[in-house]
Amino acid sequence: MNEPFTQNIEISLYDTDMNAKISIQNIVKYFMEAAVDHSEHTEYKLDRLLAARRGWVVLNWVIKMKEYPGFADKLKISTWAKPGCSLQATRYFTMEYEDGTTAAEAVSRWAFLDLETRHPIRCPLEMMEAYCYDREEPFNPGKFNLPKEKEENIISERKITVRRSETDTNGHTNNARYVEWAVDDVPDDVYTNYKAEEIRVLYRKECRAGEAVTIKTYLRDDENGLKEIITSMENDNGDVLCKLSTIWSKK
Image (cartoon, rainbow, N blue to C red; front, side, top):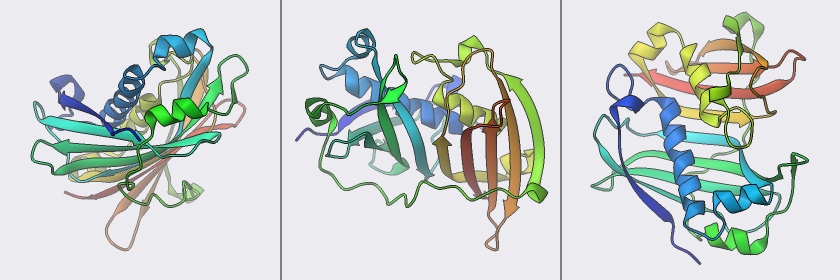
């Protein structure tokens, strides 16, 4: 069984927010890049998969933030897949400082696609074995369900058009873009005075350049003083493209 794939990174200024701390969407970006680089260190490199019209797509994320790294911080990202082969694969991530302190952890689920039909197919056993490591998961993510939003809690609604620059090699909107769109609609008071400690993302349907997306944002206060922002993104047919939940605690 393989060791987890590890990658050393340094947080660039471009990837930080107004407080020089890494932004939420760039946590997703760094984890995604680690997953791609993991593949590049196996025989199943991106160019081979694309030539065969095959590819991985992420279905959902659960990310827990322990601490937000800042500009020029040096960290190590580790990633590995859960042993076993099916129509879906589970991939884990950790982000740690040089002293071993954990900054972030994530659990994600992925599907292996036929890029011509856009249908999931079974991943070959030998491919999964190249990614897998039998190690305890960072945390139990529970069910990948999001609470249903209540219309009385809606705080904003806007419509955007997907730009070409927001799509990836699979031809659909880049995964981190959905998180970026959601964070843009977090109220200023919450964004300034709170920090996101948990991010849950469910991807339901693809969208491509030129397509319209309606973004609805809902705010819920809980009894522990936390704020939950639920974001629903739909196409013009009313199909849900993506749903996100971010839990914010007071700084």
